[in-house]
Length: 134
Image: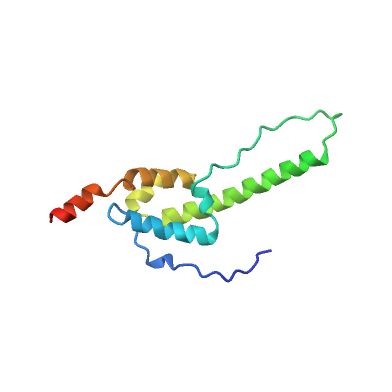
């Protein structure tokens, strides 16, 4: 059952698709949006590891603490997967067609974010020198 929230979320419909010139501005707006949705952790944490399945002999007794912890692990994994889909969808929806085509096959929002930061998030020294020179 969903709990109604009274949060005011920013209007992303007016956000221009990301390109080389507006990346930092775009990045900050989306990060604020993800923080308000409380899914920003997806961009900075690794997915929860799923332990390898252990086959339990039919005579072995599984304690309730083991089943509770595996149930919690499963719930964390499901939450992470859902939040990853949300963040990935927003990232892809706010890209130019060229960038969309590059990143559509990436399943991890964190991987998309890191690739964008490494490509466009570098220091603006070159651009600033160009502007100052003009």
